[in-house]
Image (cartoon, rainbow, N blue to C red):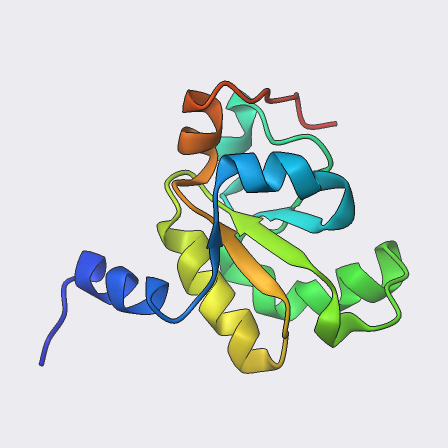
Length: 126
């Protein structure tokens, strides 16, 4: 059966953990927060303490970022939250990281759009 992109994302969302903006705000200091949007999308701001790794290069760069930049020792169990604009790309990326062996990865439900709509702040990318 052929699925539309939205149907495919909906199927993936049934298989992953999505967290709300409130849940993220309460645990933001305890997770590795990754923005999977494209570089030109970051001009409007990012969630504080997040690191940009575009969706197209995430699988190739995630381990090096965790090990080399953050000095994470237990990479497969690192608490990771991914986000994008609306939650679709981050859902697909979450499923991909799960398949790579990451055990504690989730997606921000509704993405940065829902985060902003809930009144949470954005910062300029440094």
